[in-house]
Length: 119
Image (cartoon, rainbow, N blue to C red; front, side):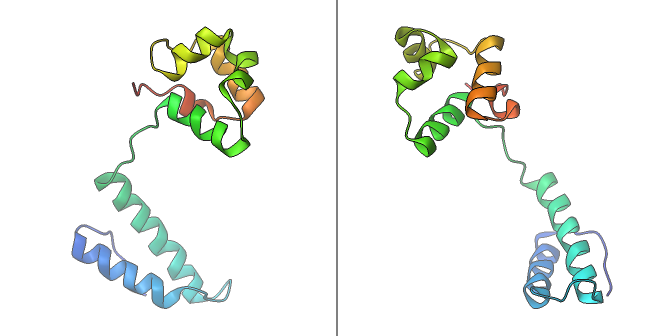
């Protein structure tokens, strides 16, 4: 096991190839340890060179609505009147802190998704 930081796309591809070879290694084996360390190195490289932008709060709400088969009317208990729900879903009104708390508690949408600065 000759591990070192990943500093290029070529090294990243080599690491991915090795991960494929090690996939399914028995827990506690040296191969499983190598797989775990490689995964950490790959994650660090990807976080630095391929960061994921925060999600749009409205898209997070719409995603949860789709998952749970909810309609805009179902959001009234969390956001307010149907007009207010419409404004939020059409990016014409920002979420208030109270709305964010109710959406998080009621629909289990992560705070990180609801508090992002996306449009």
